[in-house]
Length: 102
Image (cartoon, rainbow, N blue to C red; front, side, top):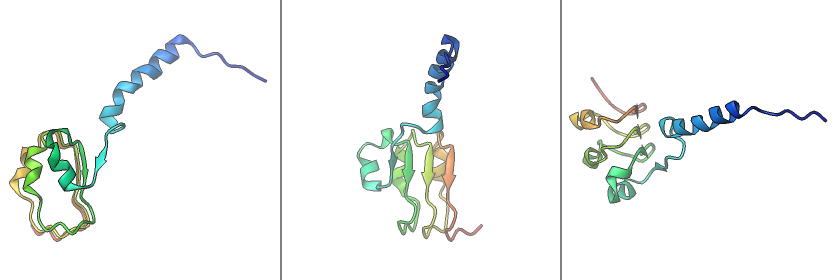
């Protein structure tokens, strides 16, 4: 049996990675119900409305100031409203498989 001892420097390095979790989306709840998201819009960080027959982008999104991830794929959306530009923290927008025309 071989026992390997790790240095305290390595453990400090691992501990520092914990601060990256929010940036990578770890520990953030993925909400897939718009009504639930409307209850506390400022706490919504990840919202998945894919495959829900959404016809237009909900105006309620403008209240979700901390939204970083939004999946609207596989719906029936045909236009992208300017309100998406007001979501300053939005890093990821998935809007594939819709009827959007340019």
